[in-house]
Image (cartoon, rainbow, N blue to C red):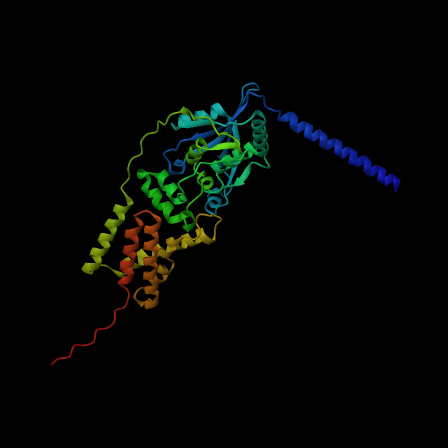
Length: 392
């Protein structure tokens, strides 16, 4: 028994020595920064493609004394990953933290002619070093991947969380925001030249994105976060200072201006006018109904998949399913043999959807589509037979 106890103590001592050695090795690989080091939030302006319309955020750690100048980017993904598009559609897309030399990072955005700003954080040397160690730990292969969420966990929210952790006990006090919803912020970013993209986004986003958001939630948007950081403070109750220094612009926006596309609201208004004219003249044919309702019903099945079959937080409770209803597939099959209660139910769904679109400020192009579908469903509702006129 004594020999076993002595052997156990010997192994425990060896394990402790090994642990100390590992800690020492890690500290040697990630040495403390000098007092001249600083940390910054990097904000990149929007690009011309829709997925670049919101800009980008990164963190910079610069220590001239040690020759360190890194950009830490939480917005990296691999197009060549297995099942990339399927995982993206299901909301199971993995992004990762990448690290590059800041001049190389800047050259990428210079090539894309996008603006870049830098806001130096008002951190102590110890806080800068702590942020650097956190980023390096997060950059380890086993820690760098995370499941992306467009609104709640993206390149900007990750930067926001790291900045808050860097300030430690000095709690940031953010300037109040205007309380806009996620959908409203998306509309602002898209602009008048990307109305078709706005229509597509409005079809996919659910009612969760129509709720007024707080200041931290609004910082999913990189440009919003840059504005908020510039107006906010951090520190103790009796001593507060600005979170960041005034923004320094490294690159100007030199993008080619976007061309205005034909507005979708005009396209669908003209389509509604054509359908109404054909209906009034009696030139509308049953196969046209079946085609129209089949397209709308299949779109409704896709919205059901995005709601129930994916991990996307923002596509749930999508009330567009009221007018892009799978019930329209049954109406397409049964046509005039559809039960009256089903047709009236669908008409009621159209009415609720119209109110939702107007109240929540969805794309105006949706309104003529709903009216067009409602018109054609109304034409299928059986009319009560008129009593025969009596001859005198």
